[in-house]
Image (tube, rainbow, N blue to C red):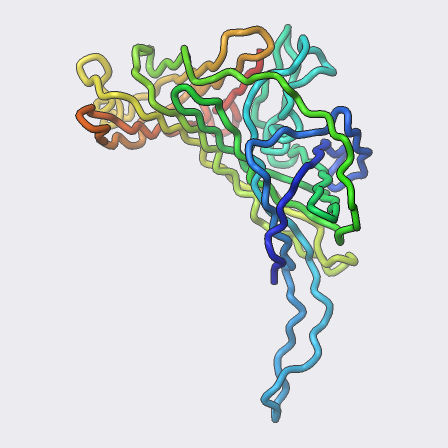
Length: 319
């Protein structure tokens, strides 16, 4: 059973000290600037419907629904901080990136995000402001994808799930501080695949494909639910480039299952630059496309760990 989609007009995100742990929101630091108004859907894992007894053509009284959860997508432009990075000055999407299965560390003048283990997963709390109501979310987890097109800003999409309370009346939205820094755009992107960088790049997409759908039902709780459990992931990168087989033979990489490295940097201004590094990749698919008279290639790249025991497949750096 689910409620109608709820349009969110503003929101705050804060990392939890432990899964579903208590947080205090701060409108000066917890605001998230979104690229589109999020829509969230409230669901009940058990609707309360009961089977009709024998001898009747009608229904009988339902039980109370249980397992109230929420899911929705937060779409945000990717950029840096408005000040020099430090242990206390982080990228604006810090809490959502960590809730997507990463652990950030401040090193030198940069924030570096590497994947963490399932049992070390971070979670977030949120306050979601609709037209006349506010909802509080706990135990939030997310999957992550990132897309950029030539000349446009890069955008991260966080597919979120979590526990949610009953909405409270809120006739006014508090004054929440949002970043006003312009993010870097898709020009002068530094893309290197297997040592080759002279691409005519149209678009790039990174997809973590992290499973956060496992609902943990709990008969020993008031809500009948104790949150979600993060699962496996399947990271890939897709790039669309003009075909240039004389200099870059994607078919040979695919057919030989050659392992190679991919690096991808957007921006060139301090504290407003970010880069992805995938140290171990193979070419999964090479799909031929056309853009009018221009031959194009869609390259789907599979990203993997160096050994099964490590989590060194994806590194995201803000500098």
